[in-house]
Amino acid sequence: MVMMHMRGNPKTMQHSSNTNYGDDNREGEGVIAGVAKELMQRCLEAEKAGIPRWLQIVDPGIGFAKNLNGNLSLLKGAEKLRKCCGNL
View 1: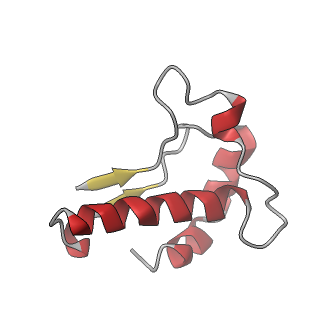
View 2 (view 1 turned 90 degrees about the vertical axis):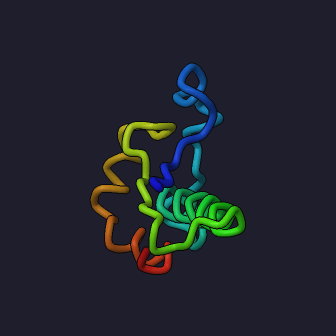
View 3 (view 1 turned 60 degrees about the vertical axis):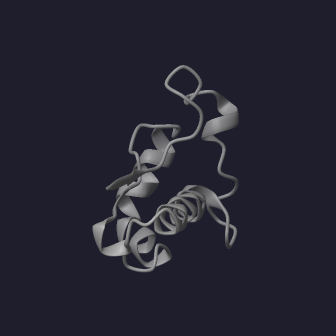
């Protein structure tokens, strides 16, 4: 099961309210922290629905509800994102 990050729907995902993740320079904020938190919530919901972690693949959703800088931050910070997601 692929757990992909996205805010909104295809028509609204690029709206500024969906692409704002706070300040990347502040602890617990920014696109990496935001995506990790929201992905982990989806993973927990899937587990509660009976899908074990070992069957889950996490996808940060490059291009979905992120601006250019957010996409680049995720690509550059892939290792940090993996650690934030508990090495999923």
